[in-house]
Length: 254
Image 1 (cartoon, rainbow, N blue to C red):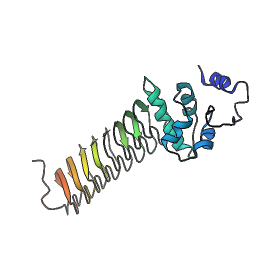
Image 2: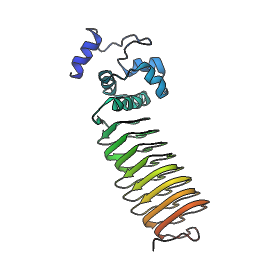
Image 3: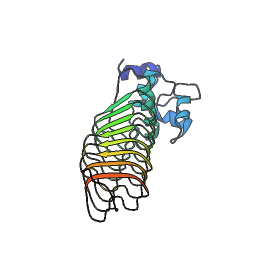
Image 4: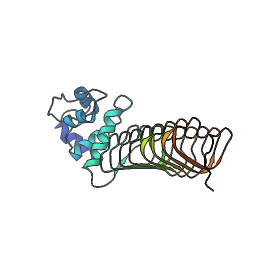
């Protein structure tokens, strides 16, 4: 059913531009309706309470442009919709797609910020470049992107992330688990404050690789710029070569 006809049937002849008054247990027809019930920054459980996992209703809500005001709500709804779908869910380039995704597959041509944040399972494929905070705080599942900006997989606990091109600054910041593979190069401070998990970079990395890391493994097939391993407390770093002021006794790939 096309979206226009679905809207007409859902509103039962009432003007679609006018919001329906909602109460707990009633149908939710817009992000504004949903925000009236749960607020603009709810938990996933609060959203699930008011939005039954009905495919047509979820598709209607996901088709709405959320703007910044309802970005979190839209993010939760994309995950609920993907979890209901047997086929991959195709989404436009917006922030928070796949927020707390537990299963299912999401495909984006390009991605905004916070895509896959706190995801616990499932897969997200970004055919183009992602924005900042890709896979932040993810606990499981997997993300594959052609490239990304800063803070990719920050505070990652589990799962895997693959960047087929280059990553920006602070990749893997504060990780305590999971696996990251960057098939291009990384900018500065990759693996900063890393506690566990692994980071693989096929290309080169910028300054301060593994800054203050206390655990985990970093492998760089290319060159690490200046101050690699600076103030490192634990874990391991290996690179093909190092710039000036690297920590003592960092092994090469030899």
